Length: 74
Image (cartoon, rainbow, N blue to C red):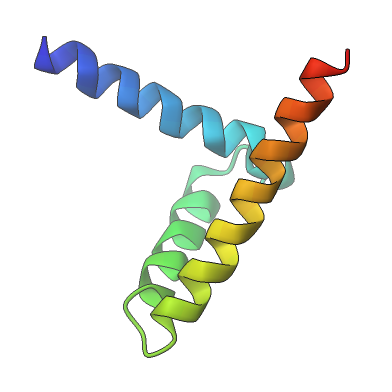
């Protein structure tokens, strides 16, 4: 069962990468995407970690809400 949960988790994370538009913007360049994720990880380890996390969480939450509202109104 743990293997299924892990697989589902990885699929969901991959879906977020696609949903964000990063795959198209990076022309499916995995080295570019990996480098960008490493940059994010560095920012989340830095002095302004809380500010970055709060900003990104706020933006993600807002976009999730807007997408859910758009689906309900279709």
